[in-house]
View (cartoon, rainbow, N blue to C red):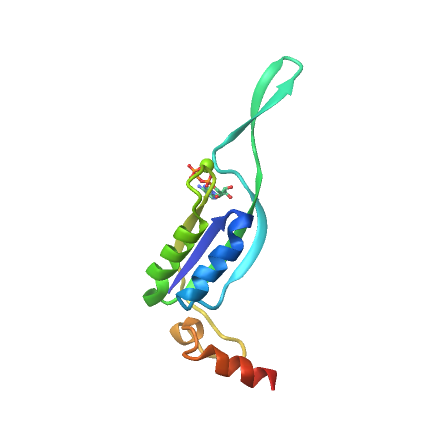
Length: 127
Ligand SMILES: Nc1ncnc2c1ncn2[C@@H]1O[C@H](COP(=O)(O)OP(=O)(O)OP(=O)(O)O)[C@@H](O)[C@H]1O
Ligand SMILES: [Mg+2]
């Protein structure tokens, strides 16, 4: 299993969520954050112009996936988040040692593999 951490532009969030839904990735965590992606900002000081590290608003998505979903999830994030301009974001992938679904105690692949038929589960839990 892997943990995908994708830092994206906030305005691309809906497109990224749709793309992940299309490849049947269902579980994720979203955090609004500030990031620095190498671009320097010019600032005026009394001795003249200098630069500082600019911080820009980004959205961080954390997605735990079984290995079977890794490539599809990365591809979905990459293509939906891209504008072609600097600052489009970055995707980090790290090994994920353990996952536990609290409700059932299911672990690892059974705890991250998307449900075969999500609509049945949604209807069932709404009843
Ligand atoms: N090495 C890094 N470590 C942690 N976070 C990073 C790193 N690089 C980028 N980020 C995060 O990703 C956001 C977007 O980065 P950005 O897209 O500018 O990356 P980049 O590698 O400079 O690519 P580009 O050349 O397209 O600008 C940053 O604001 C920051 O939140
Ligand atoms: Mg950058």
